[in-house]
Amino acid sequence: MKISPFLKDENNEAPLYIQLYMYYRKLIESGQLSSSTKLMSIRRCCEEFSLSKTTVETAYQQLAAEGYIQPKAQSGYYVCNLDFLSPEKAKVEDRIEDNRKKYIKYDFTSSALDEKSFDFSLWSRYIKGALKQNEKLTSYGEAQGEFELRRAISLYVSKYRSAVCTEKQIIIGAGTQSLIHILCAVLKEKCTVAFIGTSFDKGEAIFRDHGFDCMRFEDIPENTDILSENNVKLIYISPSHFTKFGDVLPISKRLELISYARKSGCIIIEDDYDSEFRYYSKPVPSLQGIAGGSNVIYLGTFSKLLLPSIRISFMILPIELVPAYSEVSALYNQTASKLEQLAVCRYIRDGHLSSQIKKQRKIFNSKADLIKKKASELLGDKAKVTILPAGYLVMIELCGVTAEKAAQKAESRSIKVKPVSDGGKESLILSCTGISFDDIDEAVRLLSQVILSLS
Image (cartoon, rainbow, N blue to C red; front, side, top):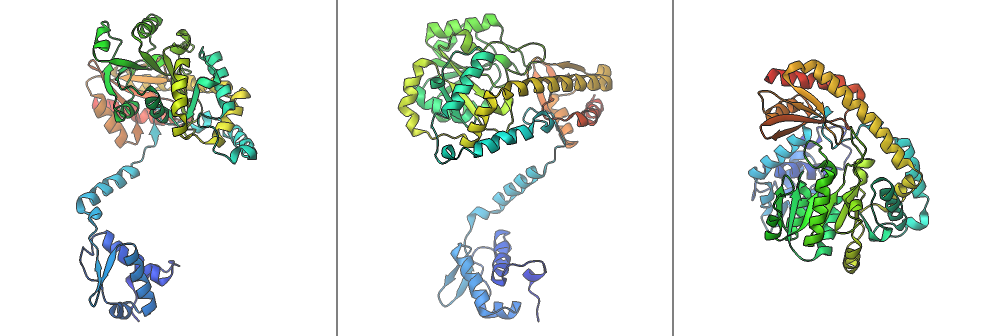
C-alpha cells in the first residue's frame, strides 16, 4: 500500500479529503503547480494515494469551489490562473514574514509600557464592573461617547489641564486619528493645515486624504504673513512637547499664537498627548485653557495616560463648532469600546487616574535617573547623557557617528532606540516607559557597547 505524501504526519486528525485538499492547495500556492497545469485524474489519484473515489472527488470539488482549480468537460481539472501569487508578490510576502520575526528584547521607544507600571488587577475589577452593567451593554451607545465618561473627562481636564469645557463639547473616539476624521467633516471648508514643532505624520495623512493641504514649520514663523498667504486656517501643535527633544512652548509664544488665531480667525489644534509626564516641572496649563476655550480644539488620549491598548481618545471642540458637529454626528458611529468607556469613567471618578499618573511619574523618574547614571558611567566622555524635560526621555549625544547607524546596529543586537539628527547633532532618544527596572542594566550595557564600537 502506497503512503500518501500528505499523510506523513501521523498526528494529522483531519479527514482524508481535507488532507488531500490541503496538499494540492499548498502545491498551487507555492507555485509548484503552475497555472493551467492538469491535475491527476480522479481514478489515477485514487490509485496513487490509495484513496476512495468519494474522498478524491470531494477534495477536488472543494478546490474548485474556492477557485484553485477548474473542471473542463471531457478533459479533467486544471490549475486556475492565480496572479496574486506571482513571484514578485511572493517575495514581498517573504519580506513581511521576516519583519514579523524580528526580535526586539529591549525597547527604548515610547510605544510600549512596562507592565509593572500599571495595576492590572485594579483595572480588571473595573472591566468586570462594566460587564455587570447589562442594560448599557445591550446597545451601541452614544455616537459622541458615553455621557458619563464625557462628564468625568470635563471635570478632570478642568482640574488638571485648566481646560474650559462642558461634556457637550467632548467627542470620544478610538484614537486621535479617528477623531481627526470627524474633525475634517466638521470643518467642511478645505484649507491649509500648518504643523508647527514636532510632526504627526499619521494626522497629516488624514488631513491630506480629506483634501487639506499641509505645511510644516519647526517654529512659529516670525512673519505670520506666510500663514495667511498660504490659506492656513488650522494650526496643529503639541505645545507641551513642542520639539523632538521635549521642549515646552514658552508662555510668550503661547500667548502670541493665541493672539494670532483670534485676529486671523485661525483654529489651533492642541495635541496634548503626554503633557502629564514631565521630569523637571509640573505640567504647563493647556493652550485651550489659556485661550478660555475659544479658537482651540483640544486632543487628549488615555493610551498614554493609562495603557496603549486602551484606544480611547477625546476631542474638545470650541463651543462655536458644536452645532457643526451636531449636523454630521449621525454619520459617524462611535469607534471606542463601550465596555472600556464605562470602565474608564468609573476609574476616573474614583480618583485612580490621578493616582496612576502620580505612580507612573515616580517610576519613570527613577528609571530615567538610573538610565542616565548607567549610560554616563559606561560611556564616559564618549557621549553626553541628559534627561529631557518631557516624556521621561534620556538623550545620548553621539560623537563621530550618525544616529541612524547607531540605531541600526543597536537593533541588530535586539535593542530599539529612536535616532535623531538635528542641526549637526546626532543623538539617540531613549524612552524609559517600556523598559523594566530589571532590564535597564543589561540593556544600557549592550547599547553602550554598540556606541563605543562605533566611536
